[in-house]
Image (cartoon, rainbow, N blue to C red; front, side, top):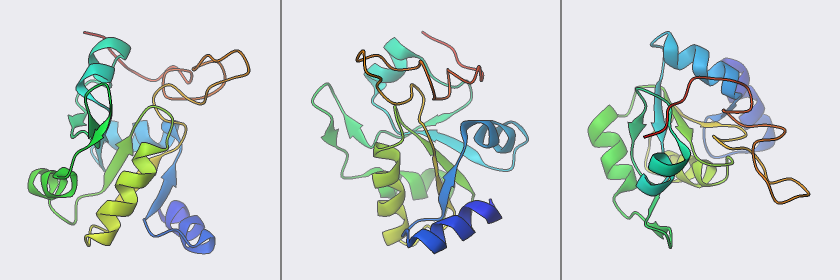
Length: 142
């Protein structure tokens, strides 16, 4: 995580930084960090999720309405010091969530780069070149 912090500082990011899906799994599975899925409940149910991850939605419902309690929920569940890895679909909402957390004084919050499904490709598909699932990391579907 030190490398992520250094890269974030060099890039002028307001939050702790970004980690690869592989490093996120290593940190989460070894108990060094908590993995928080910031996607909607619908995304988790229909697309899948990482077993053991904590769910705190950054936005809710099919219209993805911003959750105004996100930072309060994050702090209430995990405190301010616990290393936290935020995971969304492609790594964009988790950046916004990490920025909000940092602005509220949570400085141990990292973004999981690439997200759960990865970026959309030229054929309008996700998961063909990056993302948690692309790398073969553990996940389940309800």
